[in-house]
Length: 301
Image (tube, rainbow, N blue to C red; front, side, top):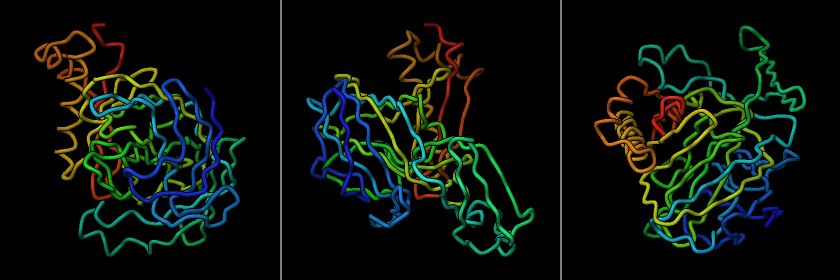
């Protein structure tokens, strides 16, 4: 079934809130998201800042221990401008370099979706003008945490959350552990483009039109978010310090290879030892994100 849903309330936490819509495995939803500051498609403020989320969407028959598969059919900016901060975050650089950082101003970018570019004109910067290709993505995606928790959209965990991983984009599949009845799926925090790590604390923050299809897999018992693209299997770990996020991601990838691809831990160790790739997701927010990746060309089956 196809649903067209226009949100009129938003949440700044991932939690067990009243569902905005009930959907079934196999359903597709067309909806929209705000930017991280709460602005919508016409640029007006419509929600409280801090990554307001669209959702939650209740998935029929979803229970803890299941896996929610989310196919990202479309992520597209729905206005012609977005905003970033103008300086690398202080904790991203050496302490001795912090006094050289500029003021963290909010800076406008012009976004041309048809041309596929974003342009910045900043007379305080050198050079004054910068144009880069856009690569639309969402920074926040996830389900309700376990135990009735409501966890701020500033951070991430087993449930997903504010991972700011730039490959959560059109065509990707996100696989989330179901931690509470109904799963309660959320999405938001659109970026027209974002570098690895979200090192200025933003991508180009912009509102989005999105479409996703859900599928429910029963009793998969995954522990951390997973992703699949045309070329890679990806496991996502969220924690602080960074090495703990890396451990979660690596462990989840090994478990995935063993459960679904006929490896044992020894065989997976050989494969990861010579073919493992890592990406850095968010290193700005309270929990960092690491992606452990395996190219499908190396898989046994």
